[in-house]
Amino acid sequence: MCLASSDRQAALQVQLSVRRGREAIEFYKAAFGAEEVYRFGGTDDHQDVVCQLSINGASFWVEDESPENGNFSPESTGGSTERLLLIAEQTYDIVRKALSLGAIEISPVSEEHGWLLGRIDDPYGHRWEIGHPLETWPPPEPRSPG
Image 1 (spheres, helix red, strand yellow):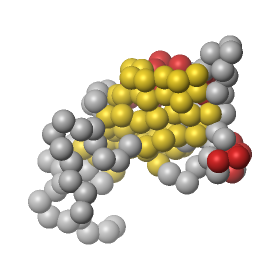
Image 2 (cartoon, rainbow, N blue to C red; image 1 turned 60 degrees about the horizontal axis):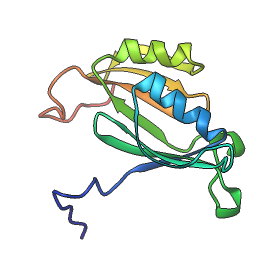
Image 3 (cartoon, rainbow, N blue to C red; image 1 turned 120 degrees about the vertical axis):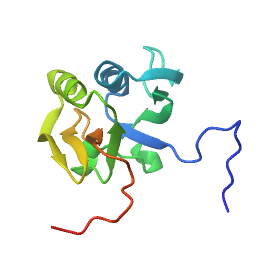
Image 4 (tube, rainbow, N blue to C red; image 1 turned 180 degrees about the horizontal axis):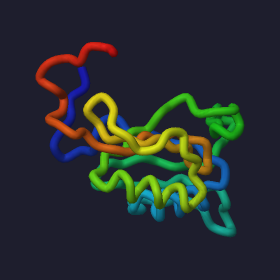
């Protein structure tokens, strides 16, 4: 059983492996308003970087890929195996900003399943869904398909 203490961070945080780590960190800061919490490396003397970022209190990590340790970026594997959901009220603004900084639109912002959602791939190969629920979430009754 996993127990979370109120003085600890969430028990699950995503760690994104990327190529060009320093550049990726700056993208997430500019596109999503991420704030840097912790950083190791990412200097001219130590190029590889490991960085903890936070968006409205939700932490995630960005690191340069290290194939020798089994950590590959989507650029190395030919695609991303995860989708990240960024819940934000400013859906249109965030998607537009990310696209202007080099993200690729997978599907435009639209209403579906009680959410306003847009889908993008960031310049480092990670798939993001950006949006927010349009009604109480989770709904009181399960939705039926179709």
